[in-house]
View 1: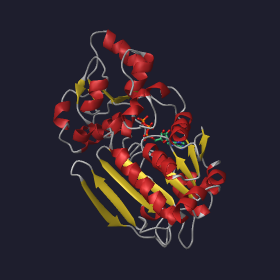
View 2: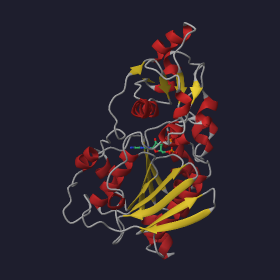
View 3: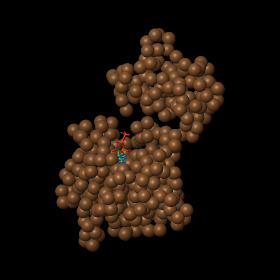
View 4: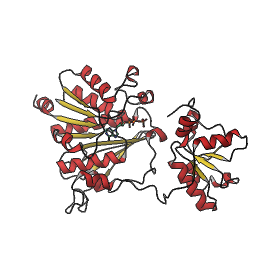
Length: 360
Ligand SMILES: Nc1ncnc2c1ncn2[C@@H]1O[C@H](COP(=O)(O)OP(=O)(O)OP(=O)(O)O)[C@@H](O)[C@H]1O
């Protein structure tokens, strides 16, 4: 009863209402956590249902927060569920978090992760954190007791475009279920001060090998936010530190617009067009012309042999334009030929040229 009372008085904010949030919200609601707040600015997309199992087919198009609030309320009408249909930013994070005992990060991008991590340090709140990518998951509790904060271990975000999103790289649908359930478990342990919460240990889950492992993570005395001489003392400074530089050597490359490329294709003598995306992405949608040379094979050099015909007219494309710009730079560095990147990637082609292709 003591523990149940404690849960009933607890206030938890979950950032994001997607794949990780689905089990987190469900289990915390079922456990009787007295007040749950969920913040997200997105709407449910059909492609989300593969892993964001708190939402239903009839919720497609509806705000994720509205759908999540409904699901939580259906599960446990005795708790308070507050939906905030907004994006978490440097302006609203502190006042929102301050009303809670614990924060759960269930988001999918680095800018938000640093914002959430820094806000928790500034407010002295524990942060239950999870992340997923393809077949791998990570989970830990930051800024709890004497454990490290997110920035102690990951001082800077990776360069923009260096890490593909779940939509680009894919993610096994049940994986956020595993990692999110672990986050919910840690949240309950922290709220009840029970057992040994995952502070100071980063758990790694490899779904393909069905293996869990953990690495110790330590506090950095020089940490920019929780160290002895912090250089980040406000969320404005936090956000500024996350204006992520483009990927290494990320200067602009020559581009061609989707309509201009479509004009060249229509002449019947198009330039060499190179798709640098994954096989899975090509199965969803592809341009009507061109060859396939995945970006990984350009990074490791094995794909360069397939680019004999590359010249200044050649056009590389990917989903949104980041990987294709990297491809142009890689090919230029390896061969001296300066090709072009399709501005806005296949998404721009779908918008401007062929809306019948599937978006993803
Ligand atoms: N700053 C933020 N404020 C509020 N919600 C955020 C913020 N950053 C990310 N999110 C939300 O976190 C959730 C993360 O969910 P998830 O990773 O399952 O995928 P998704 O973004 O819906 O996926 P997809 O890339 O396939 O569209 C999303 O609903 C997203 O809108």
